[in-house]
Amino acid sequence: MFRAYVAVSAVLVGCYPVVADRGWLGTAWQTLIGFGAAAMAVLSVRRYRPAGGAAWLCFAAGILLNTAGQAVNETLTIPNTNDSVTVKFDTAANVTTFQALSTFRRAH
Image (cartoon, rainbow, N blue to C red):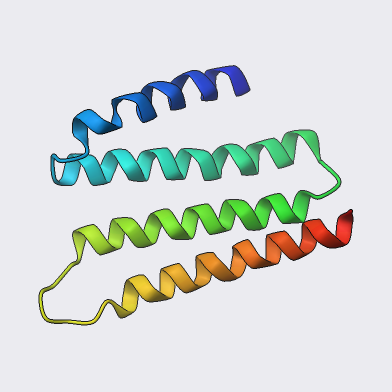
């Protein structure tokens, strides 16, 4: 499963520069890469049950929230408004990443 994920991710990341400037396709591509990374982290924790599993799940949540925030930012950007929705996603991503780091530190 991991080898397939690495192969698919390598192709997606390698092709990203080609589609990055294509509007919604670039956003969808970037979202697919981020959601795939979060999903793989969750599946790996469920399958291998590492000692710091909670920290890995927090990292996965941070990746998911960051990716979702970027997708929302690209699809719902309205001129002359504040980006309060994306700020909430980014704040949540930062909080979960901080929680993951503190969980790792306590585990080691």
